[in-house]
Amino acid sequence: MKIFITGATGYIGHQLALKLANDGNIVHIIVRDQLSPNIPVHNNTIVFRGDITDISSLKIAMAGCLQVYHTAAIVKLFAQDPSIFYKINVEGTRNLLHASLDAGVKKFVYTSTCGVLGASVNTPKSENDPRTESFDNEYEFTKFLAENLVKDFVHKGLFTVIVSPSKVYGPGIETHPISVNWAINKFIKGKLTIIPKPSNILSNYCFIDDIVNGHILAMKHGLGGEKYILGGDNLSYKTLFHELRLLSGSKARIIQAPMFVVKMWALMQWCKYLITKEEPFVTLKGIHHIFINKVYCNEKAKQKLGYRPTPLREALKQTIQFCKTKNYA
Image 1: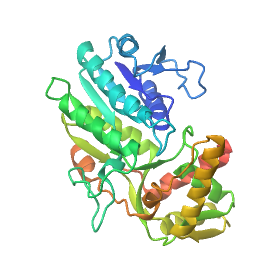
Image 2: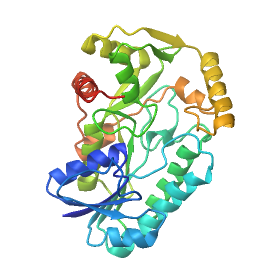
Image 3: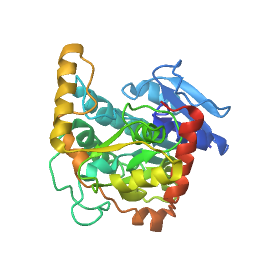
Image 4: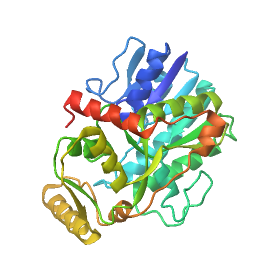
């Protein structure tokens, strides 16, 4: 089968493209830079030059494809030009939806994020739970707007499904300066590790192989207009690094940083940005994301899609081995 993927030079899209190609599908990939080292290399991949903001290039690249996976997005909390979030995450998605409808695509899977659901309070959040706080960053807000677009196109005749990954880790390319993999790599190599205080703050972590399989299951079994959380284990920072220490034998020292210390770091990042124009890793607005519970429920994906997350220790073992083997930086 011919399948079209956006975002194949990103973490999830790259692994998804390779999995689909290994399964014998012909995978059409669209990239802005045909010399990018992150392009998935496989005999079953065909690379097209283009951009999701250019609908004519999309139509050329997806010709003959029956399925579309849309994983491309601007994934960060800050950009010098905030309009880039709307241009890529919303208008780019709109272009792809129109092109898919015109091309006769049979099924469209959109990669959103659990961040759209926001913080959890007393119980894990599920797909239909309302967000209880306002949006404070363009990334989550534009992903929310894009979700609504994707749902709307069901009524226009396009079979669309939404998947929402949580915090992803595991073997693959690195496309973000501060990620779960980055933190794991630092810790297992004995480097000083700083985590938020209190260390019992919970987040949901999901193995990359499960995210990839979840996308494929959503394509096979997902219902039109529905959303499925692709999550793994709900863990505190303390528990995550305890498990990593047990599995890796790391002697790394862990320091817990209270919010005011992280705010100072964010302020320093902002001052550096004002001087160098180098985008900060974290902003004062974005700090609270580190200090709130983000606990999610994956029961719907398990029951409706047959989604089966990898056991935590097995997933962490594979990630540790990857970091050691690849000299992950």
